[in-house]
Length: 503
Image 1 (tube, rainbow, N blue to C red):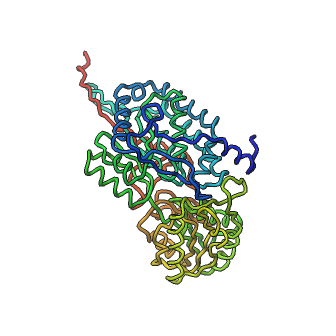
Image 2 (cartoon, helix red, strand yellow; image 1 turned 90 degrees about the vertical axis):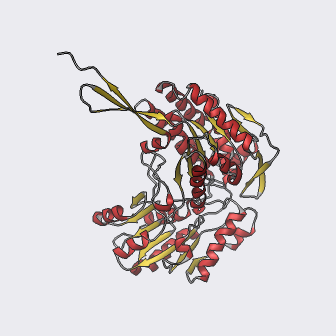
Image 3 (cartoon, rainbow, N blue to C red; image 1 turned 60 degrees about the horizontal axis):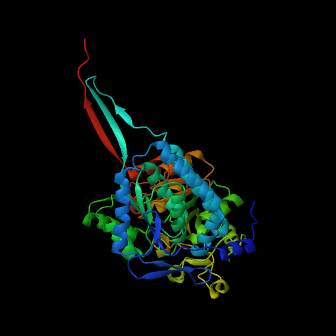
């Protein structure tokens, strides 16, 4: 077991080789244009790496490489066992380099090292392994017909896939999309978030080492406004899978409509409720889950349960416990294993979150725990947990996605009021319900308009369960589970007329 200490992770950080180029057709490349951008360390505000701002020629090169290898068939038509073996090797390589990748991601994203280690050394390789194992266990279908015909329903890779990623879970979100896309036989062009590109670039190099053919996985770095738009508008990309804000998700639908009508899978924002019914015991476990639901990854999580809906007669007791737990969260250096919450992704984003806190005060919400001014006074973009009480459904902080560590409590007087308030949003990604009554649990699970309902614990499920949202939280596409394969495959009917049997 490697040493779990700040000094160890600082030593690893000092020895890292950070990528400086995009990755196209199996090799690191220099972008055609001279434009570059910097990625910053959000814990210090200092530059971390300089990366190319990929433009039209770079996007064309990546798509052309992806299309050529797809048509050549070295991956798209390879035997299932071939793709399986390569993805299993990739999983092992990620485990081999996992600690370095985790430190790199912690530096670039500000995520606590313990979270990065869990995601990158455990979840990421396990996901690649899960989809690898699925490849040779997925069967096509034969439709029932008369003896004079045979009807086959085949699933084929959709072609060239583009994935546009968020900055909050850089390598994990890449894996949610890449593993099923690659398992399906697609070629992929990835645009990581401008703030967090480094681990995706490293993953591409490991893919080549694992034996995945050149051109199957390409990484383009650059801002969404330019590189992302060029990808969305490209006429030779067959589908885009996007995770990010609802605002940008709208743009990808527009890009598809104005280009080749490519399919678009969307996983977008949320304003998820954490519902504590009056029959639930306010145990330490419940309070820990309430805090994690709101403050995990600094609240920079699309499924964060920021709206916490509590029976009115229990609000004071609940607030006392939640505030105490929030106050105890350790905010600090992301490379310190004792840190529970790192900085916001940037100063700009921290200022945006602070503006929501200011708006909450102005609109009459009761501030129970204010951000620690000392934490905010240092370098970086730190912001400590914030707790509000006496929210009403019409308040800005009860309606809009904040994407920061701001928990708000809404008091309700009945089960139906709790359900009405929970569903009173234009989003529909996730919900948590705490109750001691199975009937209440099923009542809420069936009536909450969202893609995932967790009962008596905050969770998004695991790799076997699909993840996605209703309403403005997403499209019909899903990440994770067998369902994720649907984004990257299309069905073909083959109908064969047969001669009548001899009599």
